[in-house]
Length: 358
Image 1 (spheres, one colour):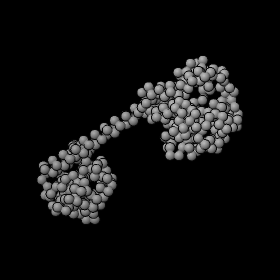
Image 2: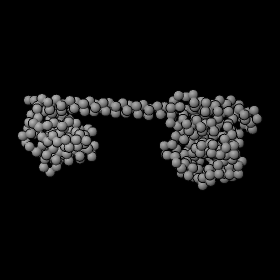
Image 3: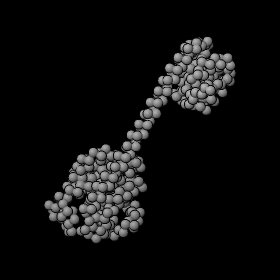
Image 4: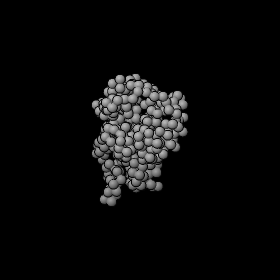
């Protein structure tokens, strides 16, 4: 017993004899579906969709003619995926022109010549099948590239975390310092007007950049980094180089340069000690010459440093830290940032409770 072909071909014609002729031509290659008018044909097209290898469509039919079916198929975008052949005795130029405008692949004039219509239909069907296979392969490769990109991003994040951990091991700061800076930064940008115009995705990337703000401290000798007491002028000049060294280090890591957070991380590492009045370092930037996200990280860094215990000091109470920041004892900050910090500080203070600070 001969097996029924898996590929389906739909014949839409109100004349049974025409459907029979076309069915006999294509039955050896396709599973034949039939519809006796345009409405029935459109319903079959919508039901089977891209599973159809082709549609052979008559023009003059009751209820809905072939051109009306074509218009609806084009509206639904189906002609891009299912090849349609107009089978008609009407060779009027206006009909053929509109049919081609609506996406018909070919117009075949009745009476049909079996070998000719078979050849013309099969050629187009093969073309569509090849295009579908190519599209599926492109989709598969795209999925693979997306997966690879995700894995690279995860590796890059791991590298960021490793750099941050290395800094923590070398200093006497709490192991949660960089994560607190990230959380404070993301809160101020996400929950106050400071982040206006930034998407949630951008804020997450800025948070990643905040984690590496002090990566340049890897270049600072232990004797200076962990000194108990005030730094000498020479030691302070050496400590200040951690901003330049941090940006330089990030720029030498290929995976970091390819990370979406790189631009934020680079600027944060380089400029998180700039101040609103231009008295910061390394470049003495004034006001909004420093991007808002880097200003926020700088403020978060100062707040965390004050309310946390360090090798050279005890932790200040939160209200004392706020007084010091607002009075300018820790350098000048954007007044808009200070206003947002004042309103957000009660929430930030609660964030410290599990960490034992503030």
